[in-house]
Length: 436
Image (tube, rainbow, N blue to C red; front, side, top):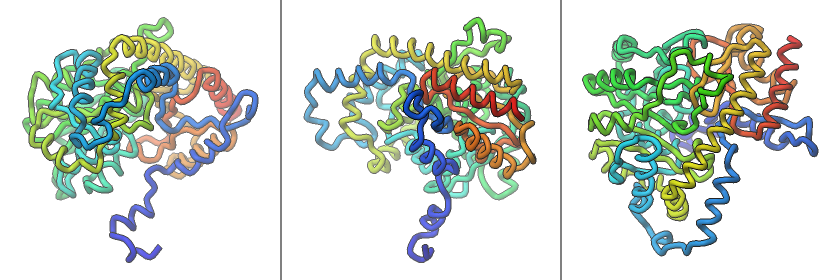
């Protein structure tokens, strides 16, 4: 296409796919594995979706729509940052299941999915050309979320080299942050935002309360906005399982950043969440930001009308959010299912002598298959990724974009299929790697 037909950003978007693996993913989705109808079919494990307890949640949602009349407000405009009743129900959910402290509904603002929340936050907290620092490896699509519209740069902070270094958590320190700040400023930019994800994507590691406090203190002192993304906060592995305890000799307790925010009340601290992962409803497009920065929330409300969630979705989900008895049962069942998925994968990886990061949560296993690389380059990673798919039908997330300095580390989504299909995927990978 002639670039004169579009803006500079528009033309760049035509040349820059959101994800390098989407074409192959859609190909795999057209040839999905089925034990009877398509036993040689593809097993995509590259997109972060959770299907483990969907039937349970679907039944509860159907009960809402079957037994209740749709309220009149659903057909009209409402607060662009979230209907008041929806915000109240979600505040109650966050208070009980995550923060463990009261949450003011007025401190929440909603958008259509996590991507929208990230884009809006970057747009409102930083100027074009400013920099967001993200510990590596991290979610590849952060680059586009903060860059395409907000024009904020991504800086991959290297905290370790080997996967085994994550056994004690993510080694981030204020010294590393100071070094990053000096490096960024020497290049004419500003360190404006620090983004942490806990549990982490892709490593499954979490930050201790002590780490979060030290980092929060540093960010406040340096006027850097700290955003903690807890999109996987209730997707946690049961590390007390007898097969897993040895992997966590000094276990870290998960503490939600929302609890610390309630104490600090700082305009530089923010929290992201979405219903996509823990509840397995990425198609519902529900994301939120929590902040005690009133200027930020006012700006979010004024600028975010085009990012609003449909009122019907808000109504359905407020009924689910208010049913704490159901949610307790759901998360109990979900943790059991997710832990079983993790066991299936990690047993297989151990049998193949493949090193991986012990996970506290998330939907992933982060593994080191660098010894199978023909060459330790980005091209070598791509060749291995394609070869695995072509020979096994198992589609991993490509290593490209995670920002980590070591080559040959790949992400595997463990929550997108039932346990029987997951075992088939592991058996295929076992055959592939043991033949190498």
